[in-house]
Image (cartoon, rainbow over all chains, first blue to last red):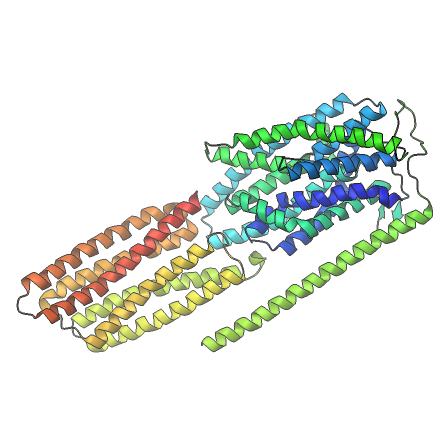
Length: 411
Length: 216
């Protein structure tokens, strides 16, 4: 039953993997600098790591916006957000998982009579605007730096391209980590307050309840990347590739830095220690940040025809997505509660301890089941990667042999 | 990852070696023509053989470079143009080899009075191609400087045209003592020598466009 309720979150994770992984590896795959299989494996591994290690910060902020206190509510909310994304994508409207989930939480708050924390909401909305702006700033600075280094060093084009290729993989891995750390909140954030799983001890390391959820969400995202992101990467990548390879790398790095900043509690604590205001831990839209980065480079290069339509679409997305998702959540919750008779949540009492029956506290048997499920998925993943590496090795060996034969015959 | 393997370094060396072959081929071509005009057939045959070896090397290098660029997906965005440029450069050394071969087979009778014109034509035509090589090398290391380097190629190419026209005019209008078949044969040799600068110009046009694209 727990797994059934999680399916909507997993679906959301799948769609995030299918769509947003292209922001990280799209340019590398689209330009054929990195093969899709290699990109998918690196993205999946680092995304899961980011989600499990650093996913808590942004998820807490979403929790503050609305502590969904019933698993039925979390399920409906994630489903409504996923449907919003599906419908908006179908009509080619700009959409962000972050904005959909925020709208859904507000819809839940309205339905259950909970107050939406305006402070948290304004903090989140502010980052939607500041994310792309910050991305543009980073992109300009990094682009200036990289072009100056390139000109001063008089590096050979092929060596430079080789560095860029390696850079795209490293930056892509960092981007995937940041994406996992920042966007896992969108996928699993709404389940965090409603789930209380037993900690899992794997011997070498143990996973808390939240980390187990994030690991499951991360795996769903990874499945999304492997099964469906190839097409998106090739399409979106082709658009980004219009930029030079170094600009493409700068765009991915700038976007990764923005996502990392908005999900790093360590960096935020450092800011507090040196007397600066803390950085809000908020999930931001990677697609919108990347558009900000591309526009930043365009501005630096002196491109006059900035695509204002694209900027307008982002702004519409900021308003239209949360409203649509909120409305859908409100009506879905109504149906769930009154027709299917499922507990979808209730008003949180200020200061009261959340010892609620509707919060899932599974028994030892369920925890064991989740433990073996996770272990099974991890083992399958490792086996698949090993198989892929062996396959690559075999392919390279065959290519080498055929090359040797060709040159022997031609001489 | 290409950076951690020797593939990249090897490829750079091969590209450089290819350019060296072209440069050396042009040098030997120039000396070959001079030897022929000096009626030093032994030296001419040696130069012809040297050009053939260099052209053969260049062909092998061209194949290897194309092959490695495709199999290791190197410079995916500029690969087609780089391969085309290398092909155009190979045409230059091909042209040098075939010119020397034609001369070797047909043994044209070049009147000593035209020696100066033929030397000047060869020098200028080869200069156009020689000036192309630094520009091609610059494409890989300092693409901002490519277009200024190409100016010399265009200059020498237009000079070659002028010299070739003057030589042809002299052959057909001033040299009454030789018959029309002889004149046509000489014109054919002039055309062959001039062709090197034309090939250089073709490569320069391509390189010029490539340089704009890469610095944008």
